[in-house]
Amino acid sequence: MSSLSGIDILVNNAGAYKVSTWGEATSEQWNKLYNINVVSVARLVRLIVPQMKESGWGRIIQISSGEATQPFHFMPDYAATKAAMVNMTVSLAKDLAESGVTANTISPGIIVTPSLEKFYRQMGKTRGWGTEWKDIEKGVMREILYNPVGRLGRVEDVANLVAYLTSPLADYVNGANFRVDGGSTACIKPTRSFESDRSKVSNWINNRKPRLFILVDESCE
Image: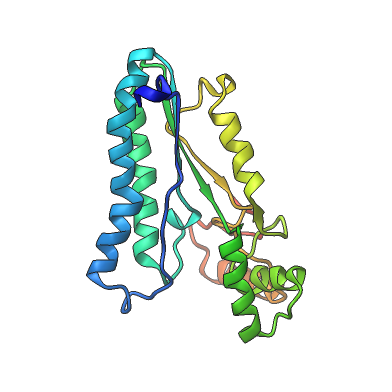
């Protein structure tokens, strides 16, 4: 700390995960992931934030995940740690009130990194997606996690938002959770059977005449 003459920006991007189900994830694995993904954030905040408050300016960015609010049926331990990060950010923003220091969360969707590309290339072999990355990416979009943009995320997509949130332009942005996922969170993928489903819903409304009914269309809220 002293050798750096202070720190103005903290980006908590360290994270670990293991692809496992509820039955496969051991208590030790839960504890290990919580220590890496959550407790590490608390350690760094406690170490660095006092100096930020003293200087009257600072930016704290937590890199969470779309799984924090929309988890898969697997990797429950990882999703829980990322949800904790979102919660911590809101609490921290309140604690830092009127200090000049802000805290925000970024929740990426699937972002293409070397390790992720390797993972999906291996999956592509078993699922018959082909060997070309463009075909594998389409397979991921089709079978794993759809988004309306039509592609997987790139590191630059997250980095661009980090650059904004850590700049003076974001002085009035605080305690927020930003999704960088192409719209995959809380989206319904359009299917060929949608019109059939709409017809069934319309018939149900006409027969039952409910007092309140909300029809969820293909669009995202």
